[in-house]
Image 1 (tube, rainbow, N blue to C red):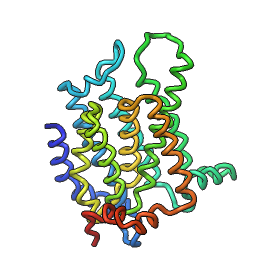
Image 2 (cartoon, one colour):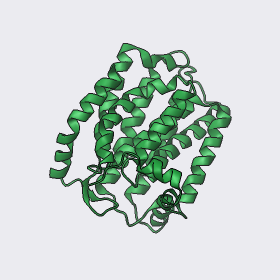
Image 3 (spheres, rainbow, N blue to C red):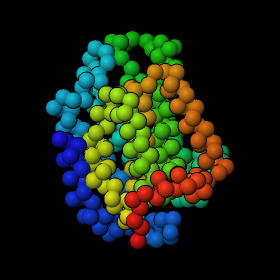
Length: 286
């Protein structure tokens, strides 16, 4: 019910929100060099977070809690991940430039003494991911010293959350592409029978209310949307997968980042007919 409400509320709110972005000058040239409102993801992230808060009060999200004193913790963690990474993404959307691209580009600029919004987002996103991972672990009691195994799991999970957040950003180069990747990741968890898929329902609903506007090329979700959706998938994977599988997934995401520094994912998708059909499905650009 809360997911359906989030879908409807978001769909009705998008036109007014796009007008607000236009008036505020939050526009950017898309891949067709058309000026389009950017940062639209901030709306569906907030709508989903409000729906998640409501769902948490009703009880469904509490089933994932682990450890004494952790009741309701997943609702809080997923909401914190959604809003935190969305704020970092919005910061990059509003003040960032495209002079430096990729993690290596922002790293080189930082070594040369130039702080970029991408570097701030990467550093803060990595630290925030680790904090979320620490709070995800079962509560051992106040003052308990972290074990080496616990620190290792937190490091893996923190990197996985941060890498997932940026991976969705890598795909946010065409209308609907990042959104389809998010829905595909959620569908895999749902088909796999993982109960964590229900924790994402509020954001799935709010995103679906926004999705048609993105497919039509009327708005870009920006980093405010893609980083948040990726972080949600990363945090969900921490709950759904055993540690060995999380390590494999983390290695795969790191490989994707390394490949993104050398090749164009858009060219790869356009040159493969199956990927191209999936990528262009539903897209109705002006």
